[in-house]
Image 1 (cartoon, rainbow, N blue to C red):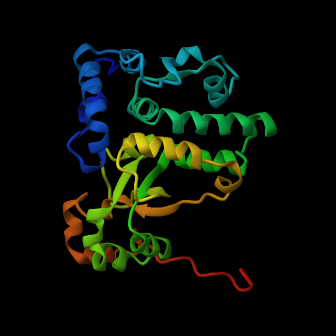
Image 2: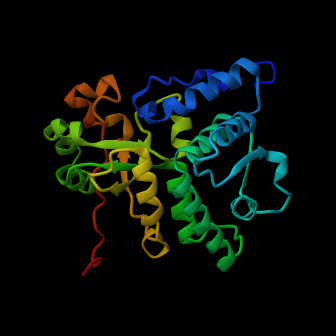
Length: 264
């Protein structure tokens, strides 16, 4: 995988707070890939095949499985097979397929429906664009309503300072595989596109089932997400223990000013 260099999977810090829901599944697979210099699709497929009773909507193969000129999303929908490159991006994508099988299958179904309706265009249509944003950079937040009110208002001081104790009742689970890849080298400006989940979601399996039903073309076309600088989450980054961490307006941006006449 590393072509004689350092395997990028060895750089993943599985003790990072954002990877806690992923550690039990992901760390042994990463260790196996590093120890045996194994292809990413092979270690993912070994996990997919290890529990025949689990719902596994796809299998994993090498990138060469994807025929030239065929849309990646359409191929997965038709063949139930995920072409996989030997890199961190596709490793995390495979973990999401394994951890969120119902939600990923639903997302892929909507992508295929959009391709069937509009074809593959140079610029994605609004539904495919929204689905891709969440697939690459999304997260699910189960939180008390005051946190959500502050997040939607981009009232960062209230969200992270005044309401800080409420984060003990919240659960933020990453979904976007590109976001997980970027967080291998965390930087303060990194932002997740967050979708609201009910408070009662007490496991990843529950979130998976709920998310698969919550993805609807008529509502997702409008990108029902809230931007969240993830390293501002209490307990996720040591520096945010200081209130002035949130004074950086380049990261914790104020809400956009409505244009004149808009919304009237």
